[in-house]
Image (cartoon, rainbow, N blue to C red; front, top):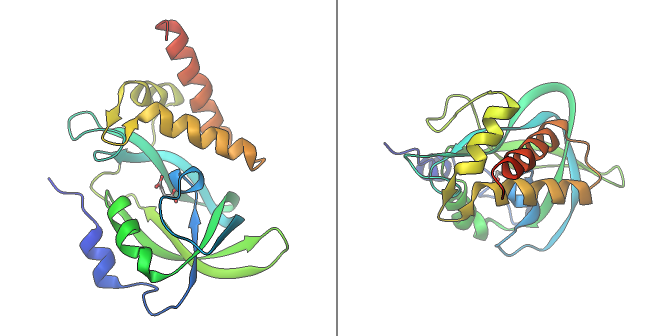
Length: 192
Ligand code: SIN
């Protein structure tokens, strides 16, 4: 089964008419760029919260043992902090490939520390994509992350890198920090 959203993103062509635009990252895009950008700075978006509800069959897991990675789900009034990158459409090829396991390009308004607002792009995996895993207990999510590995490395590294990056941004993300705490307990229980 293919979860590949690359063709859908190319077909929709969202933001490809721009010379430059802002990309909002809230998961691995916070701590690992891996593409050229003009500048970056922390930003927030409103009405969305980070959740480890998306399956990773290509980066942090496999089709048989999928990992769990972050997506955004709607939450009226919630503020999600992340990292904004000013990019050109030249990096869409890289981004579409990297986010191909269910993520689509959406428009969002982001707000910067100085109060400035701008419209930009965010990759979101919605509940109707084939790699969607959805809600589960913190224990179940942490347990799945503890055992999943993929071509980009252990699923645990994705979670721990994200938690560290969120702390550096002074983010108060109870969901991510609760999974991190449970993962550490699971690893301690298994002498890791
Ligand atoms: C993002 O970081 O903005 C998207 C999800 C991911 O690549 O982890």
